Length: 212
Image 1: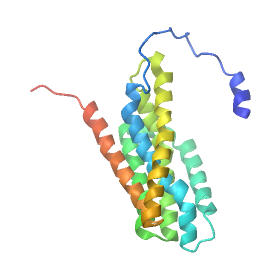
Image 2 (image 1 turned 45 degrees about the vertical axis):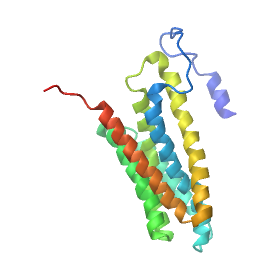
Image 3 (image 1 turned 90 degrees about the vertical axis):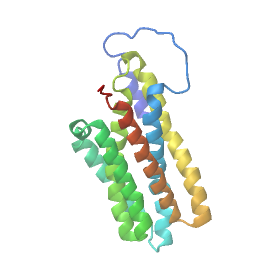
Image 4 (image 1 turned 180 degrees about the vertical axis):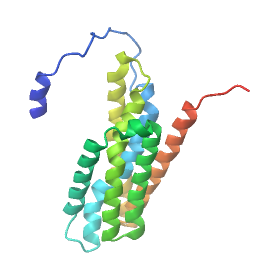
């Protein structure tokens, strides 16, 4: 409700009014596909933390998982506020690689250690990964795009957030049912590794071709 009230005071447009351009309507804007796919597998890996740490923590004898999510929220807030310019300083591609690597370290810590320390360590890695992951990918998706297509690109890109959550929830949930709670984090490792492979594809596509 508060967001709706704030939006009433937002300008209808910024700068010049965009021209109406007729073009073929598609489900997803092509510029959002590869960054969106990376976002989806990254969010699928993150689902291992968001959805399965609560039950896993109880399975190893802890009373709950509130302390882990409190630390995660505090770290994310701190990193977003004071590290907002980090992706631009180190480069978007490097920032995405770093973020996905942190997500991989997060699920690996819980999967390999399988104890309270592993969850604490994984929580720190997850916060580091998520804090820089989404902003960097969003900037990468709209970078170089037509100004009149930015809303469409962003809309297409952000839909992959939900797609990743569904894929992660269903896929890791099935893995957990078959092989136990701890195996969900191994599944998260697979998703994060796939994300690194997709990021490498972005680098290959953006590399200049030099004629000899």
